[in-house]
Length: 447
Image (cartoon, rainbow, N blue to C red; front, side, top):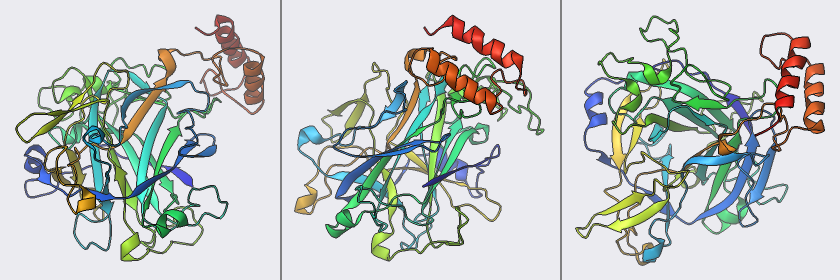
């Protein structure tokens, strides 16, 4: 599996003709959730800066969100079954890229989910997931798929953004990843008619100069905190030149209101999108002259799992249910709604237009069991995703190996990095001032 960083231009998401704005702000349209026997196959730890990859079979314990254990969840929707207490066991997923379906919403669409978070939040690790029917091999018998040629997933974080609603052109990309040759459905799962589910923690910090892809959401003061980058030089007048404004303090749609809190809850609005690329569609991301082969209609679906913030299912005693988010936990999935957004396949110019908001008819822990031919419970339209940040908000720049202390091992890493041309103080040069800056941080110790 390889990763390609993608550049995304400002306002790359464009509105389509014919009332797309109204579609984004109106009541959500009905979509159909997919269900089936999904085997949670493996958890993958992947360091986007060093290339380290560790596969852990589920049931054998999880890898940490970061290899040093120095990250903590700061926003998450991870609970898989919100109706377990009512006896339901069905696992739903949203299979939204099935090219044999033949409809406009069956392939190459972009799904967007969104939430709220505190200003100036540093993210050093994200978690993504996929559920896949594409047949794969397992030649090394590690229980996970070897990777399907040219099956790719593209995940992007945006700010400020409240889904597809008002302020669409105010959103800016923060970071975008394209993961190629995604692991597919293992032979063991395929033989029983099951699909394979994968989660992947993407660590954004490698511990060496120039190997940091951490980012800050909701910059309000022009300082990226401990993150490698943030949107602190926003083009406020659309002339193509940054104006030195922080993303939380701008009005890029010129409506007289700040773009950063479109839902008025006092928190910063952000969103994330996912789009899959099918094999056999002409892509050759790994430049090996093999564009892959699209499998048959019964085995080409790929999608994402539902996720739920910490909380509880509440019966409103009127036929409707509410997922009550527990905002007291540190990783509360604040801002999640029973709604998601779809954007159209890219045009010839690469732009995508808003199709509208969708849900599955309203969350409810009622319905006949799937095993009896029923639909099971109705899942809320929220998808699995997680953000991680530096533990305790602490930052120790001299701790290069991330073990929480500054000692001989960190000095050794600094010397190794320095000898390889490392620029510790970020002035573009490798010289005495880098040594002086590191010694100052080292002598300050770790909090």
